[in-house]
Image (cartoon, rainbow, N blue to C red):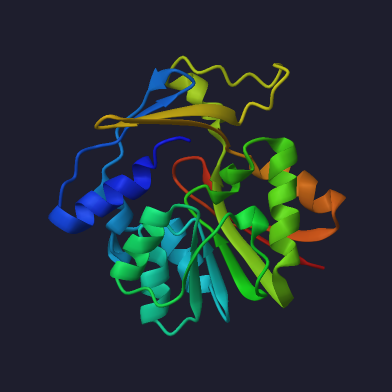
Length: 233
């Protein structure tokens, strides 16, 4: 069983303000560290794509991978019936401690208790699929949780630009999809690693077309990032 780095870091920040960065490597290349405080950011300090995603949420909303609850808290404060879903018990406890009323600690792939009008997959939430097949499975499960007329809103990044800035090989000629990466994290004496995917809009559009879903690019951000929406035709 791997360490729960994010949940532990959130708890430490909430308890004492400790903001020791989480060290990050992608495919063995060291990246900028992640400060736990970033996951407690206010609406005003969120990227514009995140702000717009939250403004589009309506009806009964599921915040998947709620982390420390910054999205769920803003939605709740603005009258949205939001459920924060977290697989990490520690992160779920932080959400509850911060005042999020509806918090569920569960694996999203196994969660099917309710139907929702809006499902949020923010901060590259599509990456939970880990690979191309898993991304389609993730979306099929999410679409099955939608009420009639519901929507999935999320953001992703096209990381084909990575080879312009470092040594990560994102060649589309390789056998694996170029958006699939391997994360390694360290924080204090803890270590964690996992596969992740950054599905480009073209891949998500293919998955939508194959399953006869409506797919929209709502906004393009300044850093090869995109705000997207899925819904039933």
